[in-house]
Image (cartoon, rainbow over all chains, first blue to last red; front, top):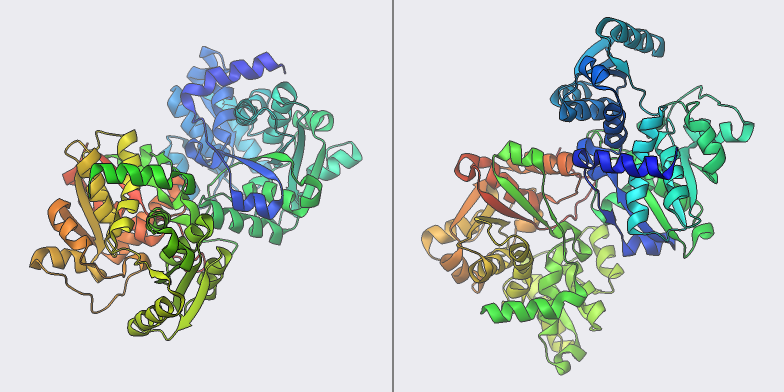
Length: 311
Length: 311
């Protein structure tokens, strides 16, 4: 993956995405001791950075493949992102969702024009059903994070941030499946000025932290975190990028996530989802270390159930 | 009050305020049928438009008066605005607050450097205590809305919006004490191109609506609304401006306020307080009338108690 590929990707997806704003907050600078630049992907179309990778992955398909549609299994933001991206590009999207997925998530996918295919709520069933759709419809399977074009697409958020603020010393991003952090690490390498990339993870789903320690992909046995976007397993395409270009993974406790989320809601007046708060929580946890540094933080999304707030 | 006064005011207060962004939303355009431009005073310093009027009112005082400080009675956004404005200008601020005001509001005032003087929780006591402070300290009393320099200050939000979008056909703003709507109406007259100004009020505190009907200032006997910023009584300086320059007051039900608030939170990913949602609720209630019109909406603030959400 090269700088030129990242640049080309950005040019190609621009018509389909928002160039999201970068916000600052004197008060959060004061609280953290650092100089913070928040890249607001909560303002991205469909409410999360996932739109970038989904658009790029679909645009990367041949016309023949596009005509047969795309398929994924997801009950989270990627389901909505793939549906909206496909709709905008004029491609059919099949989304395999567990039968027990919340109605509000199903409605969102339908609202963006995706076709839902329900399956029993196990990972095995999801994968089997997705394979079935591939075979029956000839649709191309697109993984939500472990896919080169998805990774490059997600990297365009950091690209935009670094184009605006080239002298950031650190970039913080949450780690779930690893698409965002891998893309961010590539962007920092190509566009940063010795900018270090820090991955941020809840202790409850610290597979990336443990994987970097052990040198092989580790799994999570339980996924008890409020950061529901970060429950996904790290992938084999992302992992080597993390090994090479991510300086460190900082882990945070659940209460730190909700405190960070509340600080951003109350002081910045923007809605971010718990997964996004993980990055700011990681900075707060180690704030002595980042004192007076210029730090970019990727706020990954803003899709949150207002009936289930952690505070 | 002249166009030049409004222009001068804006120039004077610029160093102390944020030029807030104007946001748009395809989805809310679709839902409302209108072309909406949201002026985001929830991103203003201390979280509400009140900062504008507070700064302007203090800057308008003589050096002698400034040296003796300012005083107001408020338990809402103006208390915080006056405290922060005074701190930034280097003036002492005394804030008379009812003894039963929430601790979080007291803390906010203290955080901005205001000196709190507690009094029993009746309007009479508040006014008496404020008069006492005036006499004892020589401080100048500044009313939160019924004051010419406050009105002009609040008008700078609409000025900025109209400078950016000069061809807005309507401007919607909530009506509480009347400072914001009066300032907005003046800005629309000076900077708009036949731009009509619509005041927005909860049915529960519809003193402005009834005052415009009867031709004299009416009062609210009860104030049972979630839009806590709009409970204030219309004043005698604002009222004639409303009579002259406000086209119409649209009233909304409480459930319409919370629906409008939720729509903005969920789709724009920004935090607004219930009072701000009143303006969008008024548009939704009459959306046939504003179909395909270019409408500016002043989102007045974002200070909300996350533990007491109406949804």
